[in-house]
Image (cartoon, rainbow, N blue to C red; front, side, top):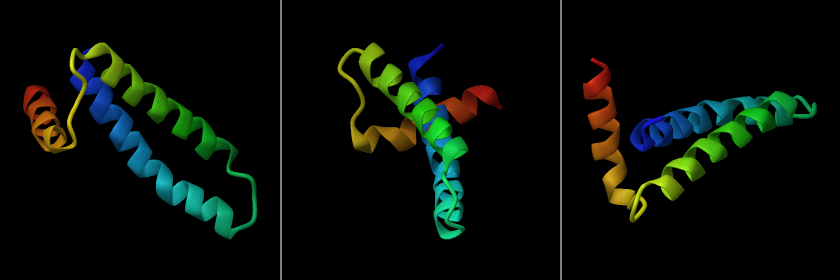
Amino acid sequence: MDTDLALILGLVIAAFTVPSVMSSLSERRPPRASILTILIAISLIAYAVVQKPGGYAIDEIPDVFFRVVGRLL
């Protein structure tokens, strides 16, 4: 898997997990599915950062996002 794609997938999954966690906590139930998706997101992000020589800088993320979207379209 391409490291750029892994990073973007991890960030998108993490973004979609936040509402799920908040919903679980507000309804006072354990966020089991949310924890699983958080682990998947962290794993994808960690894979991307470790596999890319030099890692990623914060200001590089928007460029990487549009590069991946451009490749897919």
